[in-house]
Length: 124
Image: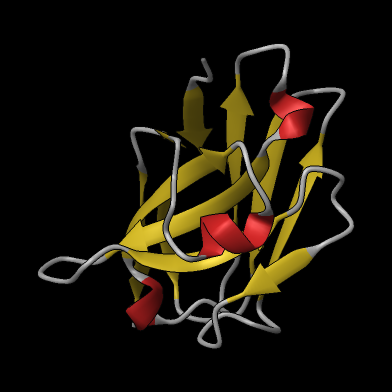
């Protein structure tokens, strides 16, 4: 069983930066691929970024590649999402996600655990 708690959301102007953090409970955190998804009003939840259990593998959605960076610290049971050059279209609720499988499986939306979400609002 894994519980995920996100933090770090907020309001920022276009071009600014935010760092989201996800704290995970559970002794087997290092065995899980981790990732971030987001859901904007009136839209379906979409993949943003994933990271392998070791941290050596990452994959990003085309819309955020080059602007966002995902990282993890298995000693602290955390996974972060550094978001730079934010755009109004990045406005959404961001969810931390975990899967006990390869991170490519997570990227395709096969999620074992979700966090409760944190709001990110980017003003123009």
